[in-house]
Every structure is written in C-alpha cells, then in structure tokens.
Length: 110
Image (cartoon, rainbow, N blue to C red):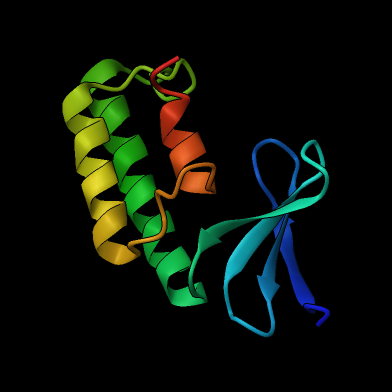
C-alpha cells in the first residue's frame, strides 16, 4: 500500500510536512532517520488546534520571561506542563515518543 501525501510546508528543522491522504494524519518525513514518517497529529483539525495552543504557549513564555525567551528555550516547568496537558487533551497521540510535539517540547529541557 502506497500512501499519498499532500505537501503543507516545513518544520523548523527543515523536514517537509504532509497530510497523509489515506489516514488524514499530519506527518513529517525525517530525512535524517531513513526517511521515517513521523506523526505530528492524528487529523488536520487536531493539528490546527495544537498550533493555536502552541502559539499561546509562546505568548506566555514571552510574557513571563521576555521577548527572546522562546528562542532561548526558556520556559518554566509550569508552562511546559500546561502545554503538554493541553496538547494531550487535543490529541492523545501528539506527545508520542519521537513524535513532533514531544521533540519540540523536549528541546526546552536540554
């Protein structure tokens, strides 16, 4: 079975983002990991909702820690807990190990 993909854009790391036509999942192709198809969200709707929550997360980081706080990956544990809980409520698979949102949030712990 060959999945068909509709191109949407790129991640911050330059990986192409697609909609899988057969499942409606939003995924990206990880060229650094044998072209692995990594899940972002289970549907286009949950992807849009997750993006809105993430925008709010960025606004809260900046309000609490200054304009450059997001770029410097400076977020409090409370904000990370809030965004994690919010993403899980929107889409239970969104924080799957190795998935896009899990990797994005783990970058704040480095």
